[in-house]
Length: 420
Length: 170
Image 1 (cartoon, rainbow over the protein chains, first blue to last red):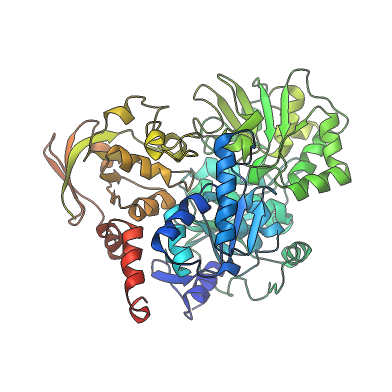
Image 2 (cartoon, rainbow over the protein chains, first blue to last red):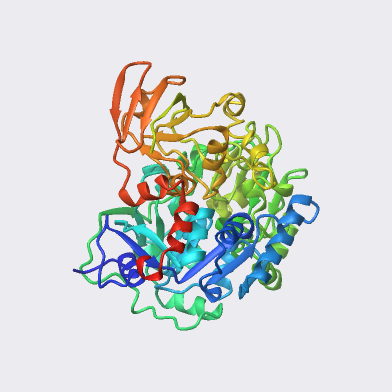
């Protein structure tokens, strides 16, 4: 029977000719990623309790990104412990404070189409934008993977979201995903793999596809995935991945999907998700003029190179109001360097944006971008749950980098199409 | 598994991991101190009032958000011995079993009110609301997850499995 891309990857990992949705299978893990919160201090410590080594040190990547503020004693301790654990366990791939794990993992050449991957973080699904199957798991579950190299999985159904036509100027992947959150809710695709397809997806850069895959988590999806193509291959090669096979990792002709949803890309307008859930999404025009205290470009979702370029396109030659806080935390050090080199960062800074250290930062209520009591912010991150980015009294709107930048200029929610 | 008897803590839909394990609650070493911050934004009395054997009840989307295992771990530290909800976020659901906390899917979970006395039988998949006298039937816990939770969680389960000769592990 023809298989979907996800089913093909799971079947390969399970050592089977094919799998069917609903089956429980045990898969061999091709790549495991853990960070400084879920990793050495949790999954690693528990592995030591079991008294067994890491099953395959070449297949594990440890990345520090959550606790990288050297002024905080807990952060210092976590960093020290992570480095010590990595050294004592012979881990071959340790990436220290180079950016957010979901962006740094592919940037370091570890992700490629067809891999069955797990990550101890819910946004591990980001790698699906590159044609890999990657799911988020908890710390103890990661211990099981570290000890055995295996994990059980209930084969998910594949839901196909087809974005037709062409996105208009000022509309981005973030608007696609927020629109889906608004239409289907935060559990709209519970346990399903969300495959993004259609002409608007083909036209997107790899960065944009990663944004869609990333926020499959905000639709309840087990993961998100995009069929790899020449763009994927070119980007992965540039990142140093070897042995990329895009032809092998596509849906079989005639593969069936549990659900197909069609979204009219031509008609899509910029979206804003009101506090305190991504599913509170509505056209930006519903919120025009809402006063803001700060704007933030950051996280694995919203500060990749293309995200910064979108913001720069809006900000070029403009100024944010005096006293307004506009902060930018590029997703990785490499991205920050490239954005500086090509002038993108210069445009953002000239407009009044302040560049922060790379890391999870404001997305999880840490550092300078943490919202203050009663503050109202707009951000290109992925979640705006109560208490995530600041205290309960704070409010956070989610939007695309275009819309965040436009709103920074006005000090209030604005439609980026008026700035392009 | 034995029958769990206790009071229901019911907060409705969309209780997310940022509420269960707020930022700042899980970066330290002392998890018991972190657990005291559990749900502080929606019910500051919760952490101090939970007793051993109590049951956490959600409706839709319990545990949505992060993969952080501290979310169910804090509930367990505080004394919660079973979690019942209409629907779960998938990582939270797996995390519950992995830390040895049975999670039951109950279509009628919203009928259980705050403070109701409950009796939960994870093996039979039943929840008896002793306050109203209504007995509910949950979706049965899948056998592979029952094995993990009956062992006390993934760690004790793995300890046993890794002791077994390699041939028996498959």
